[in-house]
Amino acid sequence: MGSKDMSQGQSAGFFEAAGGLRPGMKGAREERVTEAMLARAYGSGGLPVYATPAMAALMEGAAVDAVDKMLPEGWSTVGTELAIRHLAPTPPGMLVRASAELAAIDGRQLEFRVEAEDGREKIGEGTHRRFIINNKKFTEKAEKKKG
Image (cartoon, rainbow, N blue to C red; front, side, top):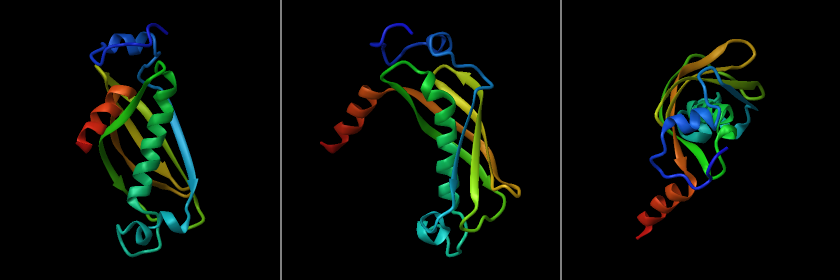
């Protein structure tokens, strides 16, 4: 897979060739809706239905599953943008499945189409962007904020 000690400015060509990233790659995650995932538990509403933030996290996880396994050791992706619509309510106990498809690669920026469904209908859709990062450098940058 090439050098494990790549610069933060590594070209997208490396990730496409060595990492095997290409549009069309897919990932998925699923979870059964529990009380902890409801809007009233998240504080994003007062109803006993699957929370939008829970759906968003599941969609992000599906995108991670699509690409992170293809990256060299010490590299991963972080979410940078999420534009989704929550289309329908889902009660506790139902299984929700999110899927993500890599739609475009622009340097180290990746764009995904994301969807979620609950076995009855599509409950969410949108786009999600992630950025390829060097884990060590990214963590060091975050730690510097502590002072």
